[in-house]
Image (cartoon, rainbow, N blue to C red; front, side, top):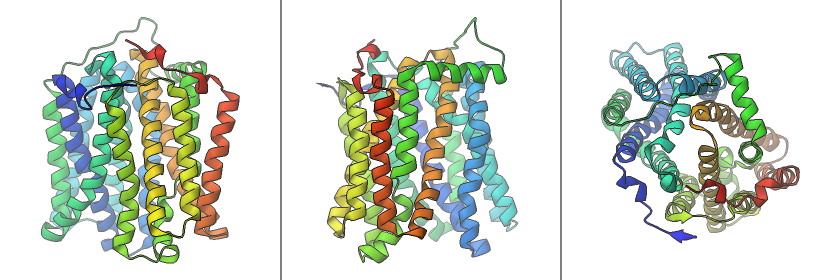
Amino acid sequence: MTRLSPFLSLSVREYRLFLAGFFVSQMGAQMQVVAISWQIYQISHSVVALGFVGIVSFVPILLFSTIGGMTADHINRKKLLIATQAFLAAVALALTVATAVHVSTLTLVFVLLGLEFSGMAFFGPVRQSVIPDLVPRAYLLNAVSLQILARQAATIIGPAVAGFLIALYGVQSVYLFNSIALIVMIITIIPITIPIHHDAHKSAFGVSSLMEGARFIRKSRIIFSTIMLDFSATFFGSATSLLPIFAVDILRVDSGGLGLLYAATSAGAVVAGMILSGMKKVHHQGRIIVGSVLLYGCATVGFGLSRSFYLSLACLALAGAGDMISTILRNNIRQSLTPAPMRGRMTGINILFAQGGPKLGDAEAGFVAAATSGPVSVVIGGIGTIASTLAIVAAMPRLHSFKGDELAA
């Protein structure tokens, strides 16, 4: 592994502007997640209503992510980036006004939440599609790492800032911050040059275009295997939804301890991401991906078995590190091996699995925990991650032997 500056891709003006805008917009998005949950509970005082937040957030992704991917491959990606941010800013502004004039209802908030994630279904594919166009091929691993780190940092910082704003100025201040953050991203996108990719063989917008993307993924065994690995790991391995149970019933810690449990996963992810972002060339990428997912599964089992608070923190940090390494390398492989005119559709289809895995996994963990216990559910999930990873490697051995030389500039 050849070392380089972990901030190398920031030397490229286009990427520097894009990442700055993306970080600010992600801060706003993460803050708005907290604000919407808070407002829904204040209106309804219902745990069931909070449960619908996940459903209302996921359904638009399920319905529109593939359409968003096709759109990113068929129209000007810079214009689509700006349009999605403008749409999301309008939704945030509508939440701001409705809350400020006291006309917010549960129905209105859920409708606007659905509109927000409909916009995100179009933004996600185009956002990921443009990254290879902003940096030289040799910088792509670093660029992917920094983008994921920026999102992780926003996930850590955003909710804390939202809590302070809600306490000081009310929920509407968070919505206003998000609308301004999205406008900031538009401002950073405007001066960026994003090439327009023409494909003489591109199918018309519609089912045929989507099937063309699905065939490409199915024929590319490496990309297909990374998508399957992504889904299986997040379906079986996530212990996040059960952390409150572990904090109260197993580890006997207060809300401060629960916060540390949540932070441990992010801390491990950030450290691993910073190390990986400083690598110019990573050899034997397939083995590292498989190993990092197995680490994630083993750490999940360890967390489920642990009765020590500090050992639990260590296991969660290892799980976060394994997940981060695998995520960065998988994204780098997919973006590198996918032709530019196909990136949107590939990403849109991948988002279905990447978003579906955690959502279904949370449901699976909850059902198993209800039938058995929290620790048993987590241990079964970790074992499921290990078993499914080994099954995928056995079915598609090309993944394990993939070195990454094919990604060279």
